[in-house]
Image 1 (spheres, helix red, strand yellow):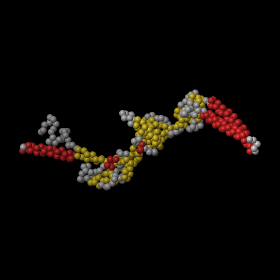
Image 2 (cartoon, rainbow, N blue to C red):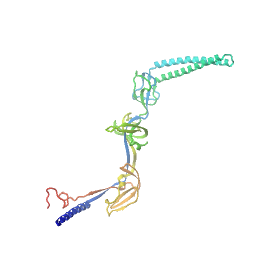
Image 3 (tube, helix red, strand yellow):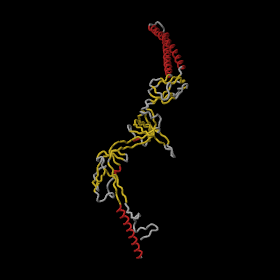
Image 4 (cartoon, rainbow, N blue to C red):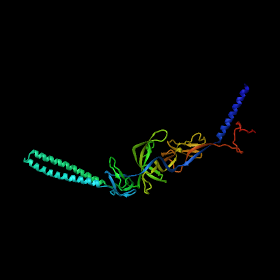
Length: 398
């Protein structure tokens, strides 16, 4: 029993000695390095991405309100047109016949109306003098009112026929460029419940817009006036600039691809873009980056510099800490002295934080501390180890 107790005591001493050697060696070889970086001016931004379509700012579909045959076309794709310019004519024979019939009906009804008006006025004067009976007077008034009604009806029919004939002459409603032509000469168009489109005219192609679909998770950060950068596949090396001009309240739902059929809700954001070189074509797909947070050339530091605090085990008893109570502060290090600098912060994107006041440009501040263990390698290139630890297989103790 006494021998067993002696063996246990020896084992405890060996384990304790090994632990003291290992941890003592590690503490002696532990080195702390403080990383500093200067306060510099930089750009701080945060953004959301979306996909959109290039569209003209003003786009008008030109159609016709009457049915018939397209007789002549005076504009084609890419034609530059001005407001009021003749761009197409429809066959007018049928419309002219309808107007002639309406005109004849109008003329006959007008003559009848004039006659009945004069007859009614004469009978009214005679009736006032009691020279004709009430029956004759009432008959003349009836004929007058009936003729007036027919005359008014024929006047409306003539105006309609004239308007329909004018619809056969199709002019451009705006100054612009024809970006689509949907008919050919000789083609018959039928104007029913929906007006058939003949041309699509875009106003000024040097002023374009991008209609981007922004996810519902990002739409809260988007606001009018924000800077936008976008690219198109047609010019992969070019980056175009724009500005958010409208956030439409109407949303669109679509099913996402994948195993789960969840609906994706997006909102349309309109972005104004200059197009002086006419590189941006209607209907191009745009890859959009909207800068929801954007400040340029402002004093900034890495955000983690504001989270650094010189405390044990990063500092020793020999280090001097000049602390100042503040909500936000940066630390500078001069030898073994740490000094706190209260600062006023601005915007942050999680990586960089704006510094409004409290520290000068170029001042090196502590960002973080790195702790490393330095090993003492023996001259033969092998790693030094505890004399209590077993060696690798095949090794012999000397």
